[in-house]
Picture (tube, rainbow, N blue to C red):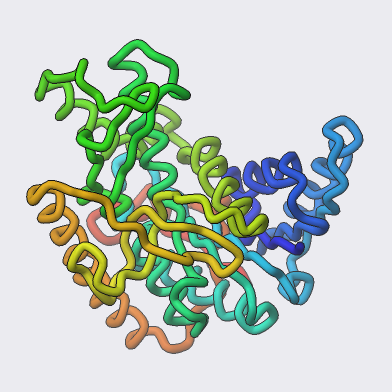
Length: 345
C-alpha cells in the first residue's frame, strides 16, 4: 500500500505522522513545494519509527514522480484561513492550487482513491473530480468526519459525558450550510432525551458550524490541524483496509435524499473503491430541506469555479502557505480579505 500526502504544512505533516502510527502503508510520500520542508519532516518521522513500532517508510520530496503508483492520495495543499476569513474567501487561490496538484497526481496514479481536505471543501472536491477525470466514487472529501467530531465534542461538553459514549452525525456542507442532526444523536446506543432545551441544541449547532473559525481566531496564525488530520486518517484507513465502515464524508450524489450531480456531506460506506454506497438515513422534512439548500449552495460555487477555470487556463504554480506577505504599507487586495502573496515555481 502506497499513500501520498500532498502538502507538508501543519495538517499534512500531522496526517503523515498519524498514518505512520496506524501502520497501514508500506510507503508514505510527503510532497511539498518548499525545498527541504518535506525532506526534513520525513526524516524526523522516520526517526520515530523505532519508538512507535511502525515499519512505514516515509519519503519527503518536491517531485511528483515520487508519488507515482499511489493507492491513495490526500490533498491537503492550499492556503489556510486567517482570522476574519471564511472558507469561501479561499475559493479562487485554492482552486488554482488544487487544479495543479490533482493534474500531477492523476497523471502518475490513475488508479488512486483521491481524498480532498483543502477548503472550501465541497467545491474543491468537485474540482478535483473534474480535473482528475476519475470515477466520482474514487474522489471524496473529509469534511463530514471532522464536523461530526466537533459536534460530538460540543455535545459531550454540554451533557457532561465523555465523547466515546456519543453517536452523532453531521451532513450537508463544510460551512454555513452544514446540517448537524440532533435527532440522530445517541448516548450509549439510546436516543438522546436529556437535552430537550432547544436553545441549548441551537447553541451547540451554531458552535459546530463555527468551530473552525473559533480555532482560527484563537490561534491568530494558522488553523486547526489535529482534529482534521485525525478525520482524514480514519478515512484513509477505511479505504486502505477495505473496512466498509460508514462515515460522514463529502461524496457524489446520484439521487439520494432527492439530490443529484453535486458533492456534499452524507454518510457513506467506504472501501477499497472509495465511496461504495451513500447511506440514506431517516431525516425530518426540515432536515431534508436543509440538505437541499446546502446542495444548491455548492452548485452556486461550482459555477464560480467554472468562471475561474475559464479565466485562467494556464494556472500559475501553486502557493505555499508559509509564504504569506503583506503588500506595501500593509495594503491587501480585494476588500483587504486576502493578503498579497508570492508565487513560487
